[in-house]
Length: 397
Image (spheres, one colour):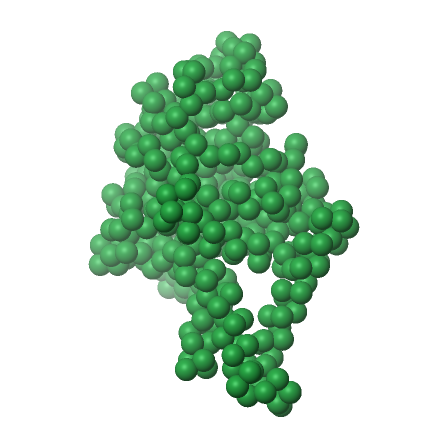
């Protein structure tokens, strides 16, 4: 029995964190070989549609000037960009600073009811056929808007996801090392997902939708970007991926701060399973159902538990067979895991002691984030995750 359980757990862990990416790459290679080649159409300058750059901000005074100046530097006709800011609940200088720029449309109300309420409220002010959502602490590359707009030339595209990158200014910290590597790997999967069929959701740092497709989202929603984008996919539209539309931000200042973010994301992931049950139907959604389950569902729910249970199942096998028996598959895997956890503990000690050795930080980040996923699952079912999130502290750009 322990052997069977170990094999099942091993398969779940391997498939979730490595196997799916390998399989996805193989499927995309086959599609390139035998499928019809697709091209990204370009829009002539005079045909560029108006867009709305929609930013929600809560007490983001430290980032306002940086974000506004970055918005004005984007390579897109200024007369075709509506700069819309929602600042609900802000009590610092956020509103005051934004009012210094007459080009901006600032909508504010004193009550803080969460980001999704602000987004729902703000959509009534959008005047453009394409709305681009971006966070106030992220910087966009010059051609981000242009790259996104080109993707909408395809009428089947209802949403476009940009690429998130971590600026490793403090790259010796555990959070920056782990988060930077995570987003490089995640970006690869997103590109492959989009090329096979559709990207699986979008990150709130940078994504766009056809304004007409927006539907108000429940105000207790934890992952607004994910719900908004995948509900558009449920309608039969594709979520395209624009790897050259880049949103850059710094990592959390520590793994402790990153744990806050990952825990609430995991809680939101579980909520999403109940909000989007239709995505589990492959007869209706085809490849998207397979991608959703493999890319998101396993990672948010089953795989983190499987990761830690696999260690204990391996341990039980060695207890039964004897720790000093001839090396076999189970003993090798057990000692590899033991080494991983020891390195993670060293990484934790080094971070607390301000000793900067990146080699130890990546295993530490990996273990910590899977722990955060489990914590998030329990938090959701206990009803302890508030829609008004506590912001994680990030390093300055």
